[in-house]
Image (cartoon, rainbow, N blue to C red; front, side, top):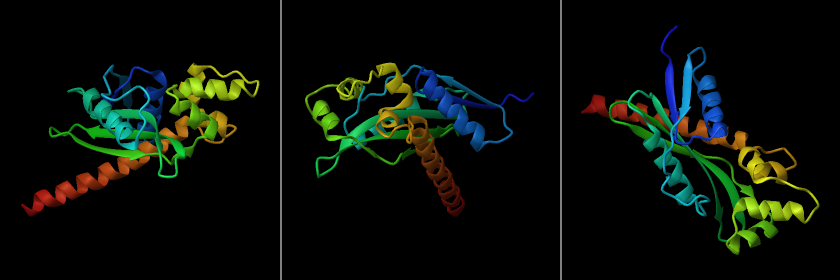
Length: 194
């Protein structure tokens, strides 16, 4: 059996490790993929409240998780942002760093998911997303645990199961890998021209 492709994920959370593993198994069909979590500090708040900080958190996790024996480092970060019309959106950011001796990183983001005004108001008052979701559904007579929100995503409950956190993560990872491939091709062409 070959040693396989090693992927380190900037989080010990099994849900994030499983999503990265699924992505790399699909991306590198037939390869033995070993995926493991690494405890790192994202350098951003637990619930980033802007596109930039969410993306930066994913990039930081990806770079910090990259171990000397890893082929790839992965960072996953969920966050929210508000647009000019004061609508708030939930999204996932993913970053992939390839260990080439000179590590190279790209990121991708999922399609944003619009949050209801009641949740936006609760977040604006300083509460966390999990607490805002619990209150939103609690007012409707439905109990949702914060642990479930971290795994399924708030969007899962708000979309009646149509949009999952896992699907958003896979979308963000796909975009990051496409950008990584294009960036590496451009670097290779540039190197040949020098």
